Image (tube, rainbow, N blue to C red):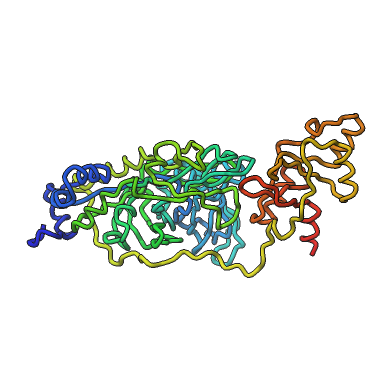
Length: 500
């Protein structure tokens, strides 16, 4: 500790590591110490706090160099275990993206699994094609290889360690499949991601100690922060990190390929950052609790960037297993592993105590004022609201003959069934009415469809069109979040718009 007794340096901490008398606590242990003894005591007693997170980090991948074949090839397209991999560089440099999916096992196996298999020492199959040149005459290549055959095998992740993440729900009438996993209809479940109070960027939110050159735990080996991650947005506590590390040195335990049902593949990554306690302010920041970390509950049934935010919720409530939405108790589950996040922080702690891991001072701090901008779009995107028209409706106590007359006078093929408050109850078609009259049925309840596929006014028309094709139907009632009928959109409406 320096003479002033109020600050210490990274160099001083590293000297303690060399001597074997460094004091290291995990983020979990640090919070308990601050609660029991206060910030001042914690600062005096602790040199380093280790953090950890373990979750799906889709913007992950690996750079590999194959070496030259004989005769040499300048690769144009390549596949590893039937997963297409990118060719961003020279003749035999490849990039394996975690979310690229297998052409033979889509949604089950992808780039994240290829990385996991290579890290585990397994043999993988490489196929490549090229157009052939005088100096690279080969046009076809097929071989097998392991990580030991590669010149370089570096994990290179553009966006990892998300500071926090949305809690996802689904208010629609049907199950949806997203990167937040399977979301059941009518708010029957919720999912979230992130380690909360164990997350590195929550323990140093102002990036006093985290920046370019910071040495970290990455995938079970030592890695480095190489800059801000893509979509880094620190002003609203959505910071991210861009990181790299030698995948040849990583054990498979902390890198796991993943497949999300009917969505795609990813890679679970273990990442931890040591926070040197340079001052009392950092000691206080590393005492943050889940009850102080909030995120939005977002309705993912709206396929737009500005999805509805239903409420804010703390990570303490999320980790409890249930949350309350509109007086309804909703079961919530985590897509991240808290157990593995704790293991990351404990492993990093042991490395520092054993003298095999030293801290670094970043050569450049991460920006704290950058803002994530949405994509610029020059073409107009049609939404349901732009083509929907008023729905012809009825109530359940009306006679079938009266509804048949309405179909004729209004020249429509669909009648939407509503209750007294205008909320959706069902739907009937002209075919339903024709069959009912032929069979002598008189009660609407005998013929109406109760399991109605719907649309929302602010969703892209393309999504609504796909939904009609998926369910082999020709119309969707348009409803709001309270299930009030706002109108209807038909396949004919879609065709007319696309025709224009």
